[in-house]
Each structure stands twice: as C-alpha cells, then as structure tokens.
Length: 102
Image (cartoon, rainbow, N blue to C red; front, side, top):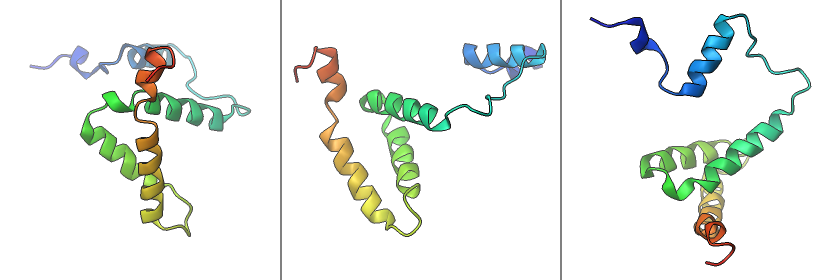
C-alpha cells in the first residue's frame, strides 16, 4: 500500500515550493526577469561541478548542449568546440579549491 507521502518530491526545495504553491503562492517569474541570467548561473554551476557528475549525466548534458547550437551550424562542429572547452577547463574546480594552484 502506498501513502500520499511517497508521491512527494525527494528534493526539500521542490517540496517547499510545492507547499508554497498549494498555499496560494505563485511560481511565476516576474515578466521583467532576466532569463539569460538564470541560464548563465545554471550553466556556470553545472561547469563548476562537471568533474563530479556521473559520466552518463555528462554525456547527456554534452549531447543536449551540442543540439542547442545555431540552426545552420554543424552539430559535429559544436561537439568539437564543447569538447575542447571542457578539456581546457577540466581542472578549474580543483584549481579554485586550492586557491588558484593546479
């Protein structure tokens, strides 16, 4: 037998947002909200944690990023550019943890 509690999201922040919405709160962003800024923050956070992500997640994110390239650009070129970028920055998190030393 399952209970209603098993249907709750595991993430405590997601649960809090769901509770807030159920109590009449709004999950809508203001119309003047800078979506580019949140995408930049999320992208930066992913890159900061890249080396700690499971390989499957890295692969999924890599493929999704390659597919987001310009419509007239080659997905293979995008993959190459992304791969080079990731390779060049693969130790950035460790360097930051050590105060700038690799």
